[in-house]
Image (cartoon, rainbow over all chains, first blue to last red; front, side):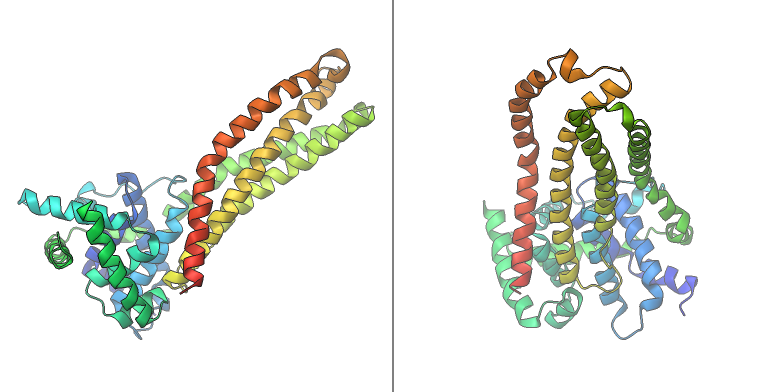
Length: 161
Length: 198
């Protein structure tokens, strides 16, 4: 049985993970808030099912990505939101404008990918190896490797257009 | 920008995010409370209200059915009642299906597959509801004309003519409405095919 304190510390430790998933799977500010809250809620609901057999981040990616997919259908059917601080979703604030531009461009390119590619590239950029990506996505490690090669090519050609 | 550069941009951004820890204990606790979710269930309220109106209309027709005193008015009354029962069932079922992804146990592949299936079903229900709604409009007019106004509109007006004139407009409108649905069905089908090939 996990406690509320443990959950809070897990979320605080990994808030960047939630932020990045939210940014990739939404395009409007209101959707960001909605998805952020929904992911935290779903993580809380599933927290007791986490058995320390895998890394906490692997479990969090799984829940966060599943919630994002489930949320694709609900985007326009929004309920009342909990007013959360705007700053929670407004970062990072790079002082260097060109860095911010690059981050925005990168998000824009990844958002253009289909959902299969989007999930795989996110996990790859986050530093997960093929086996870890496979355990979150349910694809085989070989498949992840093959797909990643194609996704990289696709992103590069998207940028060059 | 080459891929290696993208990777370093991502890492820099991640490091920056790590520096900017913003979430507080109280925000996390608020997000975990079930009353926030129960507010989300407000989404169902319009659908429930719609269902209530439909059922009330069915009761009205059934209770006054003896006034529909010829075969075509009776046929309209029966069709009208059946559609009024079917529409809310379809609508509530499609909402239930949209929420059917098992977030805790699914992997990403299963969730995508459930999402694509749900999407196709949703589009199918939308199309079906659109046609049922159009038929409902046709059959409601004579039924309510008789039950509320006491007139058989087929005898006292040229209602058939309006139907014939209105049909091409309805056909064109439905083509326009379904254009965007075709794309989302195709996307969902493609996604499913791809997932099945993996």
